Length: 368
Ligand SMILES: *Cc1c(COP(=O)(O)O)cnc(C)c1O
Image: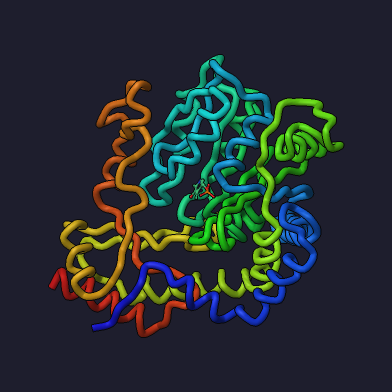
């Protein structure tokens, strides 16, 4: 029996050990523990690669979600529109500002926020829309940009899963007013600890990000506004700087692996492989299929040594944490149906063709 992990961070570390250890040692030798040169260098490369002017390294992607809405002035009583189908940190961006998340259903094929269902949720309290590029596939930004412009509300991007993904030939992260990224170890670009970023093309907003990140001060001990400590650590900046040299190749490897899966899973009755939308370059943070008798399939794969995941088992509107918002089962039928059918198969750049064939074989055998 083959053992196939959901994610293999060890394999990636082994492949860059020779580059990454000297970079970490350099931080230690220079005692650049927080921010510093390696972080600044990483920020510059990351911004350039995402076609965005300003980028700031942060302590996590959740902090990125928060800082973006905080800098835009979100406060108690405001509403923020976002998909129900996302990781809960998207919503923390709003709640940490005291604002209320307002959920929207997703599209059945992309699993991203359905732009056709956004306008009905806009009220005089709506101040922002968060587009999440879930699983690595950009949300349909043009209709969202149009809605945001028409109603004079800010559109921001949650790019935690979409490093180097493209919408109509443009990288995510610079498509709207501002964006946040996560460098949690399991993300397409992962630090060796926590990490995140906020990016924008707006110079004034960029300055606000920079200040909030460091206690509301540009000059040490001169605090112009409220802030927090959302600074990135030097070691994380150094690791991410090394990893940036490989990210394009790793992204292509994910795309190749997705294509191999699509081919190998063809013709299995009821199994739906991911749809790459015509406007999208999908970076397959996750490879998510729909499968009949999903739980039994997951169990059977586990018995065959294959790890799988659920992203996500409970949509945000059904989470206990948001009970007070008054949503109920049936509010978002497309998201709810997906939650019962989706299954994430192992996906990482170092996955081999042999491993993919084995997974596909076991899926096929389950339905035979
Ligand atoms: C991972 C993730 C976040 C949060 O990032 P952290 O770095 O783990 O705080 C936010 N939004 C989405 C969609 C994510 O997948």
